[in-house]
Image 1 (cartoon, rainbow, N blue to C red):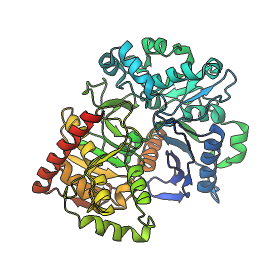
Image 2 (tube, rainbow, N blue to C red):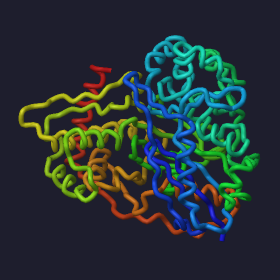
Image 3 (cartoon, one colour):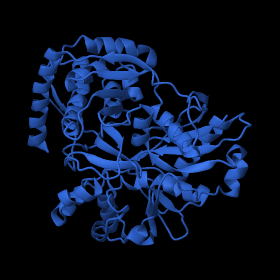
Length: 484
């Protein structure tokens, strides 16, 4: 029976899972927690060696006791990561994930110098600290010595593949989310490179998921003999693979994901890059499948912060009681307006230096009020994205994914009421990993015996509550315009 090892490198944790043809996990390793250094200047980083060790540890756990060969390895990793390496391939910077916002002050300078709408039209990305241009400008200005040492700027998975597999390339999926990738020609944008003080030679060649140039090093072959003859497929963006795992792979089917962050995406097959509204982004899974949507910088991270800061017990056995307490608060009855921007913000407004704000606090305000308002506030951000997304392709089905949603019954109902759409929540929670396995079997040319995605519950919207929430969303937008 063919086997695929799916490695999911997330910002909060890393896990490796071994799948058979039926897409049921044969071996599922425990999650290895990601550890980041967070600075007051907005920096978020980790030593490349520590992230590499965590990935290796996740593979060790998944393959423990496995004697038979694995046919393919697929890595799913968060988009937008950045690492600088020298001429010998050694990292000279930390790994910077999408949450690093230290380059926020560079954004306005780039927006003043360049035509942001033209850049968005050709790269599918705005000018924002999430993307590489602002970060490269930050390094050129603030870490000039390090900047001069860098021979190649790369994503973390590409850095890892070079070390482990000798593949010196960026996958099309990862490259498409850097903010430097030209969608029509699959090359790097020379105008942006010049503005960032680099040339296209400082960036890797771009390959698609069918690239077979990977050759595991002797050390990798010794450590994991089960992978000696495996096909190592170039890393794909975790958001695109989440859509695949959720069976949201055609126009009108959207995946709404809330993990550390949040996203609402559609994925479909096309030969050309579609035109999308200025508030949305456009990336790729591979040369024939495009991903369109919007991303929020705050999702489960904001809820986790609220619960911890307000003294809620975060133990799983108490989750039901917390949900029940929040459910007793009527929709938008608390008088609060929240901008949930602890980690900055992205779609659809892309404020470069956004911060979280709570207004309307009174003596009668309780912690349940604040958490309820926080959940609603994230929903309003999704509403903004959804209204832009439906101009590209009307939404006929929304599948909600991510542990932050599957652990609650209140939040999915809030989202259904805010969006005015039914929200289907699957029984399976590891859909990104599942999507990676599906792509692995596709690349092997193996037919899968998987059944339709199992849905645990469908949350239907209430029309009266939707009207209440639309008014509250407008109030949030007015606050955003006043402050950002």
